[in-house]
Image (cartoon, rainbow, N blue to C red; front, top):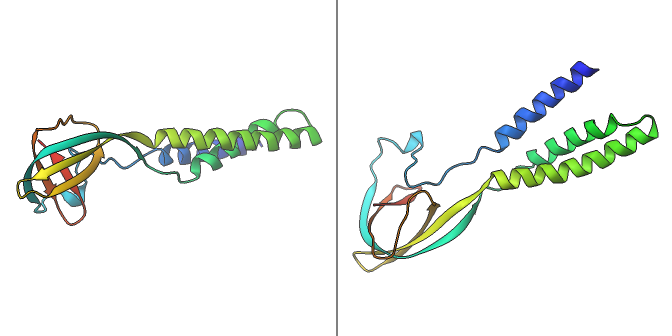
Length: 152
């Protein structure tokens, strides 16, 4: 029985860690399909910069993992009906905690960068806040069919 609980805990922990991996929206990070592709380049000047929060969303894995671990922990306390009740309480509390952990792991700081292109158009691009931009900075907008990024 202990071996099954250990295996189940390992599987649940692995699922939790894989749920915490989020896609980065940095101006400096390229995915493999974005390499060796031609991108259009437009020049402009930063008009404004606003801090935003990028929410990577929730898959539900954190909630399920927390509920499973909480249920296992709670059911190991006491015996009989008491163990069932503590298992239910543990599952509920674990689910809430797991949801919060996943939410925090998938939230990061971002920037909404508004750029006035040389042709006068205004474009707003949101990306990770891993590079600083200030109004008046001369920047490039790199675009393919899927994404646009702002770089110096």
